[in-house]
Amino acid sequence: DNKSMEKIGVNSPAINVKENETLYEIYTDGATSGNGMENSSGGFGVAIFNNGQLEDYYMKGCEGTTNNREELKAILYALIQFGKTKPTPIVYSDSAYSVNTLTNWMYGWERAGWIKSDKKEPKNLDLIKAYFDLVENQGYQINLQKVKGHNNILGNELADQLAHLDDREAQKLMLRKE
Image (cartoon, rainbow, N blue to C red; front, side, top):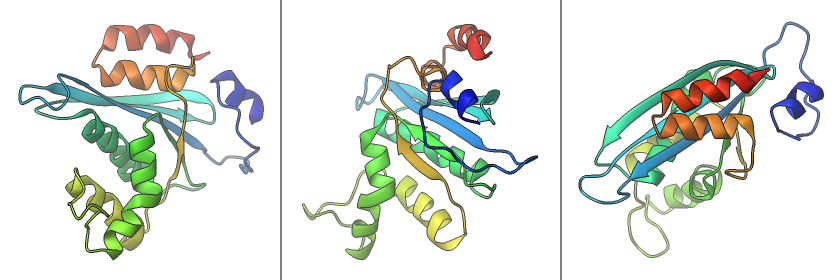
């Protein structure tokens, strides 16, 4: 219901959820130390809310990565894990690059043979193609939305801490879930 959505800091339009139906709202984030450098390290975090209540979370680290790559991996994880559930889960990301890529730009790139307007191949194309295939060919679906980062939205803050692989800080945030 709307009150539980407000409780976690999301003011969204009313969504019709039938009794005994699960509405997943999933917050994703990626982070990198030394972004773009050869010795960079990073990770992504995913905070999963079920009908407004924190249900689960996931975090994974990676070496030699970029921030944008980790942002995309977090969204891809959410799509793979929850993209077949009904009603369609809402996935929030604070990455304008990721949201624009996966809701808009990739369709033009695909029509152009996976080439951008500058005649270059998009970065992270393996992840973008995987997302495209799941959505366009395998029936996976999420409602991907941009959320403002670092704006005291519990789910987004939790995903950020998980992306930074800071489990202790994430545990503190989880205590705020009620």
